[in-house]
Length: 438
Image (cartoon, rainbow, N blue to C red; front, side, top):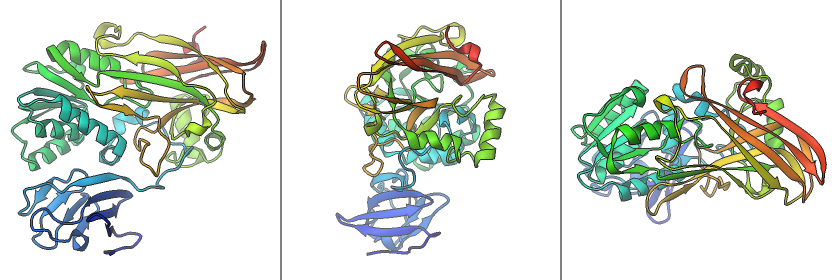
């Protein structure tokens, strides 16, 4: 049974199992088909595309489609949201996007809504927060955004949650949503950079999801280590507990061609992309990394462990700034193909029994991360390689860029060998060439 449809209007469709599919504003949600108040059929309800809320036609109870929480009317129980995210087909494999982590300071409500619809991210974090937070805990939500981790912590029984975010507008959204959910007296918003703030008490648990798709794209190791030292009580818990970052050489000819053709999907065309690169001081399209879903079928070798982060295990400098690093990696090509660059991704142990792995490539099957995607580190010249060839590279990180607390410069340089012969070399950096290791 289908409700209202149309290219511009929200589309509602009842599914088997008494569920409802709602498609609105490029997003898809699957919820219970009946209102939890008096079982009104939501397929006949109204959907607000701006606020992402659905209202029941029977007694006008209203629910947040991203969380299921009641936000108006007589309903007190939440509407179960079975799935939320981008419509399948919204993006495709090897489609190139500008790196979200490099635009951190410009994130608005639209990108936060994308994160809220990221099924892989949301399911793992909801399970981990629910497992790790104990009734009565004091919680710090570092980089709280629109407050979804704080909500789950409060629902798990946290006595109070301190939510830190640099974006005051987004933080105000978090406070508003948590107040609507009945948590106004237990959520304490704090605007600013965590390095510059103090808490009136130590937290029992620090929760955060500020990893980039390459792990430390958003300076997360320094931020979390500073939080552990200054905000966490002795014996307290960090979430995540462990983050491993991997690189693997790939063949991704379609993604590579997009860089010299139309440019990234969200760059605004070739001219706008060229202007963006010039504004960054980038020499060419290969002086940047990108967000791309790179299929496992394109892996040319086994992945290599690039970096492991454990709270307290990272060596940091004054003010929590991480030291620079250079990591040599060697890969043996396992199948013939065209080497076009490297795929980067992380896996994380969030809590005792919950892991998060963003390496998946099945977009329709929802095993990919809509918001993180994968990190694509391109090389300028594609090289045809054969099984048994070797790719030796060094990945480097230099902390800080333009005074940003989140910026860094990455470099990837190396050579491709067939037997003892060097077939080709590559050397790329998101900063000056002098930032590459000797």
